[in-house]
Image 1: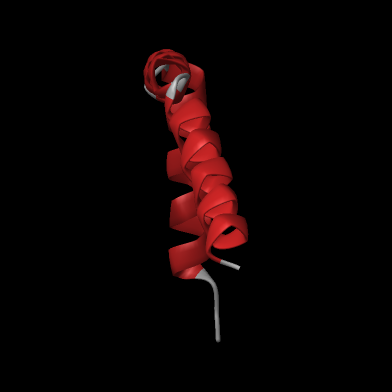
Image 2: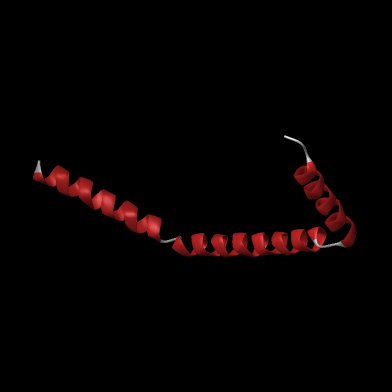
Length: 69
């Protein structure tokens, strides 16, 4: 019984060590996701602050505020 439990624990420990070996990949994936999100935010900001889109958004907000309840 002792040997079986010890073998099982050794297997679990080895599996956990193997799972830790690609921890750097997770960090690089997060970094790429953040870069992509920032790039998307910059593009969205440029579109929203452009003249025509800004006027349309202001018109939509003004129309919503003037609506009767």
